[in-house]
Amino acid sequence: MLRSETESEKCGEERQVHKTGAISGVPASRGRGRGKRIWLQSLMDIPVELFDEICRRLQPLDLLHLARTSKTLRKYLMNRRREPLWKYAREGLNDLPGCPPFLSEPAYVNLLFCAHCHHCLTHNVQNIVFEFSTRCCNSCRKTEFVDEFYWPLRQARITRDCLVKIAGAKRWQFFVYKPHIDELVKVIEKLEPKSPEYAAALASRKQLNVQILEFSAACKIWLEARNVSKSSSLELIKRKRLEDIVARLKKQGWSEELKDENSTGFQLLLKADPRVRQAKLLNNRAWNNMQPLLVKAMEEARRERLDKQRREGITYRMTVLDTAVCDFRWILAAKDDGAYSPTLVDFAHLEPFRQLLDPELTPDPGILERATSEELWDQLESSTISWQDKVIEELTVLVTSALDLDYEIKILHSAWVVFRCNLCSKDELEYPEVVAHSCLYEKPSLDPDDVFSYLVATACDNSRRLPWSSKNLALNRRLIEARLAVMAACLLPDPDTITRRFMEESDPRICCLVCSDEMTMRVSDWRTMVSSFTGCPSRRLTSLPFP
Figure 1 (cartoon, one colour):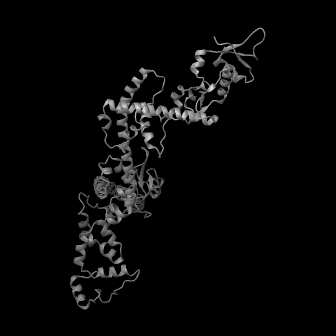
Figure 2 (spheres, helix red, strand yellow):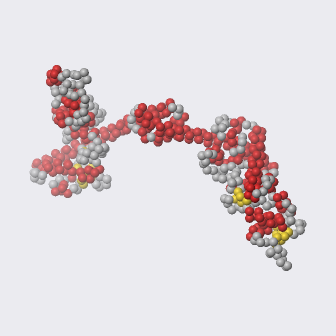
């Protein structure tokens, strides 16, 4: 038990301190399970005056926990003579209402600060019902809170105004506290209903109800203010922790990703690890545990930032190039040489424009603006010639490889060369009109190996396609066979050298011997006969003399 100061001085003369620092009579090494008992035994040797001074400096919840450590401390601290200790500890809290007369100081502290259900001891119960002076979990509410029309109330002849009520979920629903009913029934069950003692007991209970309601209203105001203050303090701690994390990341070179709170890096930082927003001050151990995930988030933020800068740079330069290309194509259209020129997206993929448009290759953002019109004209003209040669080469290779012919560029102008599209119903595409077919400019899709093409295709309205490609083209063998048959009927020497222009200008007339007889002769131009021949390959054709 706790000793007075005089007794402690007498006992202090008998105790001897060993070199190890342990008090005689107490083992130097603490075994498992004995540490708490030894600590409590040492605590009992503290003088009463010193122990009371320590208790006055504790928080109310700490004092309650201390009273629960042993029966001796519980008996000492729960003594009514120690009520000033509880009151002094409670007065350290600002604006806390005083202890009501119907509660003891320890019970008041237990109600306010101990987060256990008062009925089943469930942990972390934050619902305090001040009208009933209890903490109650959801399960116990169903048994401890009863309707105001509870049948035992009528049996005991207790009116509803004798008990404190709280509102339920429905506006017409009110609940009373079952222990209050039992307490009141215990008082009045032995009294006559019309006796003065019975009336005095009910009046005393009604007066107590007024005190309970006043106490609950004051406590609710204090609790709300305390929660707001606690939330503010926790938010300050979270803010301090976040600032420390940002400062450490900036020291590692992630300043660009953490410029402000609206940046992508800052948002990814908050999502990277829930421990970033914990209400605890940052220490080295917590930082080392979080660092790999945070660095990974910063790497992702850096990639997004560089991609955004690259996209914005390409969009700006594409706008400048679009103006120059529009003027250039206007001049080419005035020449009317029959050749198709590249579009804006084609120019963007040709040198030197590909290098000038990509900020990764050319960091200078104003290089296109500073270029003179003569320089841009020369570059556009040379790029146009190289693009046209590339298109002719691709189409020629497509024809010669499919038919196993010798390589010859002028074969594209032959009247029998015809293409079909694999994506749409166009099956009679001729050169050079085939170059402008819309299916040859595919819609963009993000390819990790070719991000530049996707960024160019989505940069402006005039470049919503990928560059020209012949991969969706194929030879129309059916029409080629029909055209060669028609050209053979015309007795032309070399079909490869006969162009469509020659066929249109000569305008031969072909007769089908199968469809003709002695009375009638079916004659048509060469294009009509090609269409008829595809429907009936067994036709025998002959040509009429050229006009």
